[in-house]
Image 1: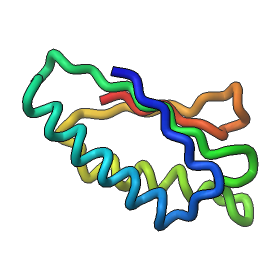
Image 2: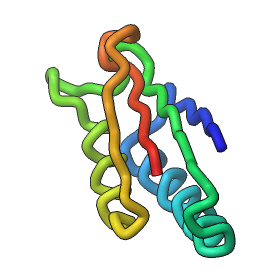
Image 3: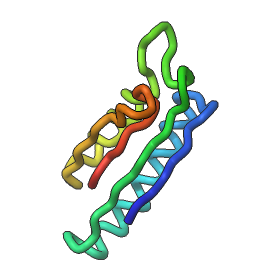
Image 4: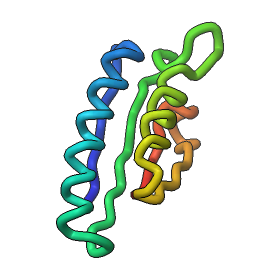
Length: 91
């Protein structure tokens, strides 16, 4: 399953709430389908909008939420094509 999330112009609080509710739904799907379900999520922050004072805030907000669901077993990588404006998380 491939998901695309656009977080342009979202605050850290909105992004955390949105991503947490998405992870809860994915948790239910993962429990139902087990290891047969592979989930790839591409999260786009937008150029320059994901950082404040050169600190990538939204990236760390999303990763902290993903760590709460670490029993999924997740990996992430930053997509270099968009100047660190997007991230791919695989569950």
